[in-house]
Length: 227
Ligand SMILES: [Fe+2]
Ligand SMILES: [Fe+2]
Image (cartoon, rainbow, N blue to C red; front, side, top):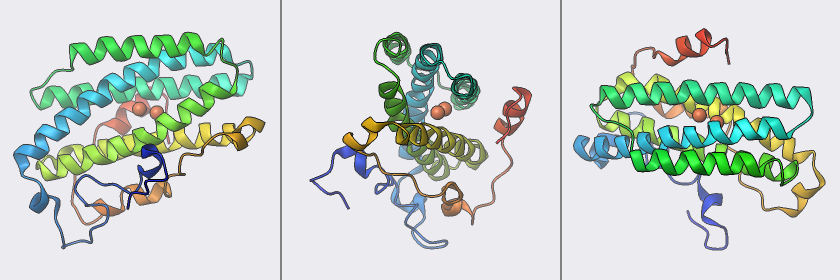
């Protein structure tokens, strides 16, 4: 339930577009809540947002890794950047398989937003980029979980594995940035975004569904990345 005393982003874990996360196997199926046509429309919109959001993240992380000096942090932020590149490639493929293309307007907007944030990383100090990244990554988890729900309702179970894997990778990103933020004294002064549930819970609502293995794990392996 929403709590009006909390900012909207603090309730991100309470909401599920189809109610699927709260449903039990064999009960309220997503397809009973949302028509396949509407679910497809929402899936496409979510994927276009995610595709351009990944571009913003890639551009921002390029600047972010230049703004830190710890070699371990540089290495991890670079790894996250590469994972976002792989996500973007796969989301683009899925959009293409659905007969759709990314939004030109969103691409321009998010590309510039990311570049601007990347430049600001050098001026804003260590904490702000870590905090902003953690907050945005927490939303990215939900974005791919929602995309998986829409894909299911639209009858595209062939995309479930990849969308859920992307949610799991975003979970790892959020954890990295949140743990980094916790080491800084400013963290106690800033509002906390809610910690996501355990990574294992991401696939739980879909455990009763038979879906094929996706292609994303092969893409990640090809890029030298394993979870
Ligand atoms: Fe991503
Ligand atoms: Fe991410």
